Length: 185
Image (cartoon, rainbow, N blue to C red; front, side, top):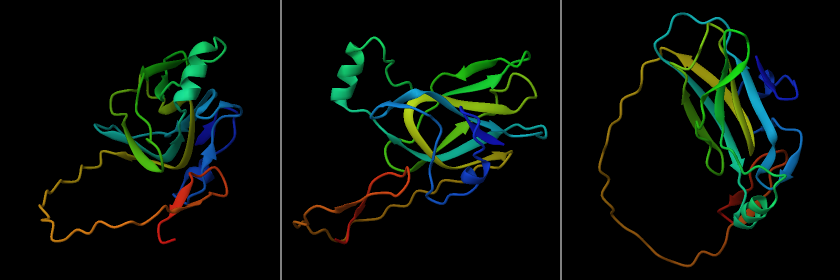
């Protein structure tokens, strides 16, 4: 299962990478800053595992310097808090187990969270909690999947040309997606 902090069912929307981004908050306070919100995932019943990894594809609309200065001068606003991982304890109360778990910096990226040792019980629900303006496209997880190898290969530079190209035309996303650019224009 997947839901947001308002109880909306997001499972279908997050089950595949399709460039259709979900918003897990209800109220945006400033550019890059929203009310505290979460994405809650229920991983269901899991076999015994040594490795459990959560993958989230999304993007972050950041605050900027002027907004950060304004936030620091307004006691009603909390500064941006990067995502934290919470899991339920034996009483069902949500506990922060990873206070800073990272985020997709800028345009669409996939972040990987190692959940191998974060659960306090056999309740495999997890929340990604933040007040940053985050949008998610797809979520998946792996259990005991072996890591891929890394192979380094040197690629010598054969040629380079420096020329004026101008600016790429911005392309606005139709729904909650990041602005992109038409490099051929």
